[in-house]
Every structure is written in structure tokens, then in C-alpha cells.
Image (tube, rainbow, N blue to C red; front, side):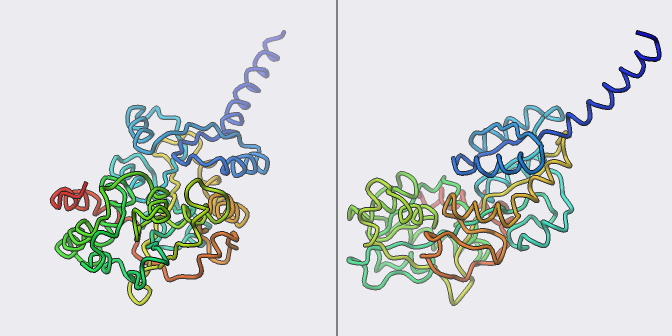
Length: 337
């Protein structure tokens, strides 16, 4: 091969290398739902960008990104709670994104004020109750601390991120003293020691161990859509309340997506998050995991639609992270297990 031909071949290789890099996306995700497979395959088919996935618990993924430092291959981080994406913000693992698409389609309350993360699906944390045993169910979060519900309420552990975020929202709205008083009342009204996940709280209503429970909407909607052991058979006996409809509205939370600080494929990362808020992806979030879309006007799945319309709290969800340490401190002071 002549010298000219060798130079031409070397140039071709050099030019090809960036093209290969632009054809992939490294996703670190704590979402573990099989239904998300369709989202990834559709994106790959539409764009030709290959998704390389690492899945795990959010805190473990965040620690991994810390350890990897500037050499981290992560392009996008997805977590299932605003309180967890806040931990990545605090660790300076994310970079801001300016996107007209994301700013237009994702409501302000469901995205970071500085563009560090964006909500991609949502759920409400609401009150469920036994229709047979509870004649006057709580209508607000404050009502959960009313002594008339003593011995009736089941919740998750105070260290659970959903419980931390709920307490953080109480601090944001009412201040720490009122939030502590609320937590003390909730703890005094427990039907049992905190245990299990959200589905277990709902099962407690069916079994009669709990009369009232706090859970995310998609756990209940899943029991409407398909058979969930020890829940679906008795689900007709469970009623629900979207709290604070005459006040701040029902507490909501999100799955969030963010571009990693050292993303080697930043353009693809932004493109992927923009895809996640497209109508097709948003419809699939709702249908595939019984969640609410974050984009207004996107249709709901039949199971979610059964829950009815509600007023959502418009607190910016960055507050759930901001007040998270204080929320844990309050629970610890109360002795809330």
C-alpha cells in the first residue's frame, strides 16, 4: 500500500471513531420494570443509538459514579424518586441541560430549577382505606395524625425514600415544628410496626391488619390491572382519597432522568431524555407501569384512569431533597421506626 493510501486509511479510521461513539448511550438506571424494555428498543430503532445499560439501586449507582469520577462512562442517570436524584445533585454528578423541548413539556414543579434533572413519569402518594371498616376516611395528610385513627394506620419504615419525601413535603409546607407534630401523630396511630413495601400496606387492608394505609398510586392501579397476590381478590373493598384537594393538593413524586456530569455522549443523552417525554414514550409509561405521564394531554391507561382526576401539589420537587436530612432527623427524634 502506498504512503498516500496509508494516510487515507488512517484518516478514514479517525473519522469513523467519533461516529461510532455517537452511536451509543450509557444508561445507569434504578428503574427495574420489564415494561421499560419497549422504551429502550423503540429509541434504538428510531435513532440507531445503541443503549448500554447498567441497572441497580439508585444509591449504589450514585456511589459507582462517584468512584468512577471523571472517567465515568455514564451518560444518563435515572432514579425513581426526586429525593434520590437530589443525592446525585449533592454529589455534583450531574450537568445542567438547556432544552426547549424539556422546558416546554415537563411542568416546572417536576424538573430541577437549574435543569439538572427532569421528571419522566409521576405518581401520587395517597390515602387508601377499608370501605367496610372506615366510615369517615382522612381527607388530608394532617388528618392522618388525628387520634380518632389510633391503631388503624399502616406505613413503610421512616427510612424509606417515599416516607422521607412525604415528610420533606410537610416540612416545606408547614415548617419543621408542625411536621414533627404530624409525624408524632402518625406514629401514634400505627396499626403495626412499619414493614414491607407499598403493596404490603395495601395487603394489610385486605387482611384486616390495617384499616388505612399510605401508598403510591401505581401499586394500587397495578392490582386493578392484573392479579397481584393477596391484593387483587380484595381490592374492591379498598377506597382511596387524594388528600388536600381543598389545599395544597396530593403529594406527587417522579422518576427522574439527568445527564451525567462527565457524559461522553452528551448529545445522545439529551436526545434520549427528550424522547422519554415524547407522547409515545409517555403513553407507554402510563400503560406499562400504571404511572401518570408528566406531559399534559397524554392519555392515561385504563387502570390509572379509574383513580379519577385530582389536584396535585405544585411544590417543586427539589424541595424533597433539600429537606430530606431534616425529615430523617425528625423521624429519628420521634422514634419512628
